[in-house]
Amino acid sequence: MGAERIDFRAGFACFVGRPNAGKSTLTNALVGAKIAITSSKPQTTRHIIRGVVHRPEGQLILVDTPGLHRPRTLLGERLNDLVRQTWSEVDVIGLCIPADEDIGKGDTFITTEISELKATIIAVVTKTDLVSKERLAEQLLAVSELGTFAAIVPVSAVSGEQVDVLSEVMTKLLPKSPQLYPDDALTDEPENVLIAELIREAALEGVRDELPHSIAVMVEEVQVEDGVTRIFADLYVERPSQKAIIIGHKGSRLRDVGSRSRAEIEKLLGTRIYLDLHIRVAKEWQRDPKQLRKLGF
Image: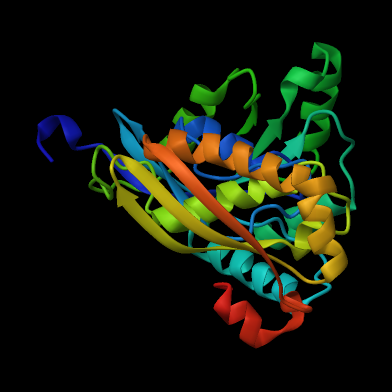
């Protein structure tokens, strides 16, 4: 590593918290690129996605996980298993608590769950741009009484305030280690999975509350020809009535999903995109082990 790298640190960290605490938005802000999809819908994150934060003194690998929740389907149970497995393997855990919401039973439950782990625990008060300084001070005090933390860091992923401070605090808590990823790596997620996630993010916009969990996306084929990347993807729902919602009046919603996701995929790949989207009905796929396997869960 050379003499100047003798104190280099590298390791894994994750953010935990109840659904919609801002974990994925914060992950993207720290990495400096969109590697995790975000939505106002709870339980948007379904895959374990790793994002790499490069700092002069270390390399912080952020593992974006689904939010821990009360499972109502086989998919929900599998996602919770995935979360707990990740918790047991990382070096640092950031407990995310929004500045604009009172601490509740969910926060207390998760604090208890993670207190037994080997990881170093810090508290991250998110969404500080939404509250006054007085309200933030009250929340920081309330968080300090919630448990014992190695640090408490207020941060806003949207405005960028304190993002670098959080990155520095987390990196200092990592073990001494050589670099784990190449200098230019931002994520180790396969391109097809990132593309499918961007399509799902676009499909989540504006849909009714019961529909988000029923949406899954699979990229079937990617072809590159004449400077255009042709992507063929299937968007799965559980019932014909949901298919009608996604398509919208005279296909208006599906066209909107296509244009939104195409813009994000073009940013990701840096090429012109032709996107071919088909809606498929896979009855009760969240409860069907065979369908879950096919869809990558």
